[in-house]
Image 1 (cartoon, one colour):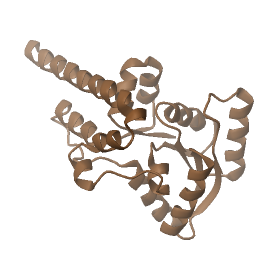
Image 2 (cartoon, one colour):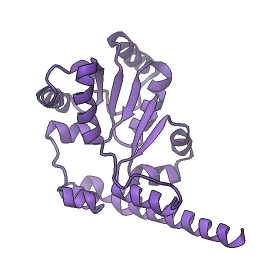
Image 3 (cartoon, rainbow, N blue to C red):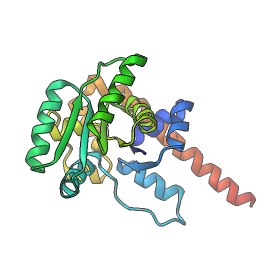
Length: 224
């Protein structure tokens, strides 16, 4: 089972990438990790009762750890750097004492070879992980989560920047900015060189895609 936390950038990337679009369409579950995605869903699906708030990857990670501790869920962490993974595990154990982290891996920042992919999958199988948390950045994490879901018996969750936030390596936006769909602006101010292209072009593609679907819906109702 593959689960994807989709923000505006994820959906904008899917607009340009047919393979990513197909991957998300066939996913077990897509969750709106971004208030702009929630608003777009409500705009385009007015006759459907939909949640009014986002599903934040960071909070999902922490909540599943807290609830899973009682059920004995076995967690595997895949992504980021060794330093972030060490801090992440410390914070998760502090938040949920007794939680079972059965493995952690920081893969190279490049496409894996076939042998490396198989070795990674074998380690997860041997760890008997119930949940694999994948933090490799979009769209790499979405592709790897889908691949792992086919290869292992775990729930694989593409969880975005949650690793960095929980580990304390990056600062989260204030709650009011998250609620008003301005988290992207906070992150841009803090990481302008890394994120300016993502938000300048990605946000524009997202808005364009939502506008196109809305116009198509209106035109369809007008001719129906």
